[in-house]
Length: 377
Image (cartoon, rainbow, N blue to C red; front, side, top):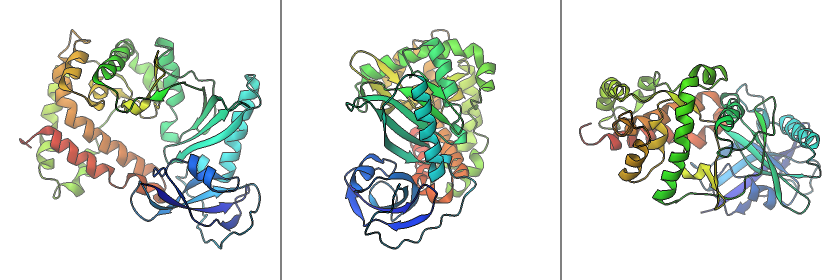
């Protein structure tokens, strides 16, 4: 699967210039910018999605992009450039310029000079640039997030204070959700075996146990509590099309009360602990992408990482004074309900042109929750 790309261009002041002829890139993921930048034929920085002809991935996608000059051969373009109150700062030409200038200044002060910024990703949840040394070696990363993820740098510092080898070090953090971290060597571990998943959970458990006594401090940094308060309103449009959803919601108070009886303490939850967010170099691993971090039951992270039942049993042994396995079993469908609430929150806080990224996520999560709950619902 690939995608066809059209780039509507503006200059650094935001003036509309025109549109490049469409071209094809191999990676279908709309938020990936690397091949778009490489295939444009001119110097561009992708700003934001304008529209796509289908749900992602793949299809024909049109982005707004910034270029420093006025390329020859541009096609006429008609794009709505009206400001939107929910637009991320990095989705505007001035915002990108300010972010790269901030990063360059911070890197210079750290003695990391002569680096070249290379855009990697941009969408409603983050914008990411890699800074390479003159020989092409990755040296640092700039990540910028929208306001609802602004606690990520604080989370990294909190976890790093307990387990410095488990998370990236924050080189600098600034306004508008900007953060610089050093390059983390290795590859993501999608498809990792059961033993590696168990190793990650085992490394994360003592940190969660230690932070369980620091919940007020966690809240003070802006980390939100896990909440299902809006779930009935979110699920209501899907009750007729997802058999069993209503029964699952009706049973939710009983299920959550049973979870409480298991005795696990509230603590820091990564919130998106899958193997794509674990970088491994063969000797050690680093957990990345902490924007979804929240305060809640640690079993949410255990069930977010799919695996065989034995993996949950091994994780539960790490909480010997609690009925952790029972809590995890009860929370398996609840984790998907929680994800539906998270996606609804994204939609409420991003501009409508970015909604296609999450078009089917709520329904998918609700259906999977029912499937996990079993035939009794």
